[in-house]
Image (tube, rainbow, N blue to C red; front, side, top):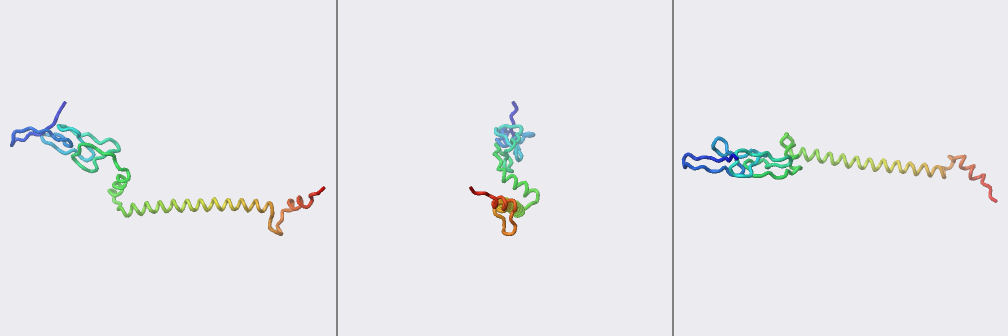
Length: 144
């Protein structure tokens, strides 16, 4: 196995590169953002697994689980959108969702009311608009 370290010409000492760093050309360098080395003496850094990050820090000895909401906000902010814009868009989407729910409830109630009115009209229509078949069926009933 290869192990990395650095050599100091002034003190004539060799030292291991610490965790979070790696050896390159005789000196220790920090691991880049989203890369880590968990052991001292590393000659390279490993990439964080999918869903893990070094939280924009260099020289890390481990990765931590990403916070999805922070990641999305960071990505949007880094693309040029401000927090106010992101909040306004989120609020607008929420408002549209609420409006859609209200409209759906109103339509359902309206259709239900229309069905009730049709049933009422079949049984007892408004005066002057009687259903003659209904009236005849009620007036031609013979009682024994």
